[in-house]
Amino acid sequence: MINNLNKCPFIVYLLYQTEVLKIKNNHNLRYYCKNNICVEVERYALPEFVEIPNENGNIKRYISKSFTYNELKYIFYMNGICVSYNTKKKKCQVSLFYKCTSDSQCLTNKCIDGLCIFNEENPTEFCTSIYKFSIIFGRHSYMHCGKAISDICKTDKECGSKSCGLLIIGENENT
Image (cartoon, rainbow, N blue to C red):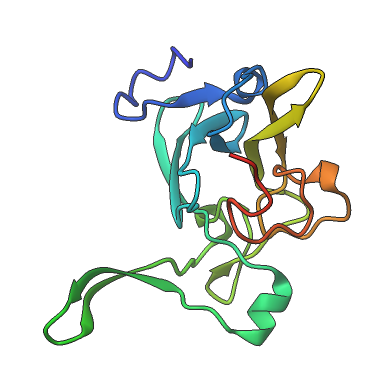
């Protein structure tokens, strides 16, 4: 656990990436990492925003919702989240938008046309538990870090999920 980041008492699951990689036999973990500092994220639904402290303990909120450049070209996504829905009027009362205006707002450090885009020069570091079962060794899991889900990859090994092309969290996982 990170001790020198005392300014972050509300972030409970905060680890250095080297500590994350030492975790064994817990197949319910996922982390986003920036500059070797990792925060745990929801297992089945990645957040649109993530707060990660810097080395001085100052919290920085990043837009973690990212798209491929091809998705940007086809514009088939929404860039907001309804946080307060009026059921009588059947419409969103309050929306939270994740439109970026600069690279530094994105976890990927790349903003194009108001959206965070996956960045080959600075891939988002995503760590997740990889669950294995064998008749000889039984069940076990270990942590693996790599590119985020939906980022473009060429091999399974370079992806945090170890499943290149995985688009939905929980897909192809044994739990």
